[in-house]
Length: 125
Image (cartoon, rainbow, N blue to C red; front, side, top):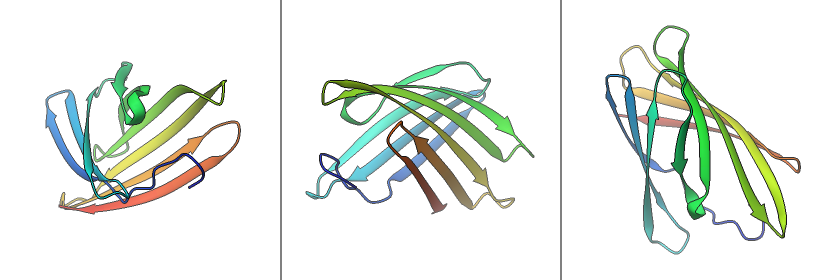
């Protein structure tokens, strides 16, 4: 994944929805074997949400329902400094839940001026 980046496996997700609010806990293992949990809170009405993620970087996002009510779309923007330069990363995550509610697929795409990263994560309940 490049110099200075921590390579981790897929995070364990705990997702809770209460009305129009969504809480996501991501627990990740680092390559050193320790774990870290990040808690993110979102509203599901298209308003801007601000969460602090890895390396204490602030991310702004909007989340909206799309499709058949089983798909959420996250639009994400994050600005950070590295090597004395400010870089903006923009991304999209599309969360799709199967009709039986047992499988969540997350299609993720992130872009910076230097690169594009794509990932697909599939979670079983």
